[in-house]
Length: 190
Image (cartoon, rainbow, N blue to C red; front, side):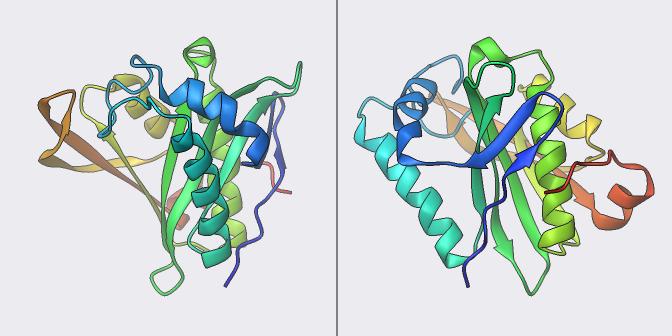
């Protein structure tokens, strides 16, 4: 079952499906060691990884397991990152949130703004009950994004991955539909 990828607009950002034209940006983003310092995979060295990432984005949508959206600034159309809702399970009405942004976009609230729009869309359009996210325990900025959105830290996955040769822990966060509606941010819907 295919998922129709949304086009979302916020006060400063436009979210649209990842396309082949994004491959150059994605390669530059994912080869930046600072951007990927908390990821469980090394920076990309081969441009083919970007093409595979775009193809996987299309495949997720076709399979009905998620959507990955490029995030652009409204002011100049520059792509600043991507965000996704993946591992969508219609039976459990759950999915996982993910995102990655270029260093030049850090500290500007783009991750929070884009994720808010995407999570709002997911709760409304996919009728989710739960959205989950994970972040390396050292990635305080990512944890802050999730907490601003109303996600609750539910636990720690001890030594669940190796980042740059170091064993690393991750925090698991969850956001329930009732908590989003009760007091979470309102997200612009398409």
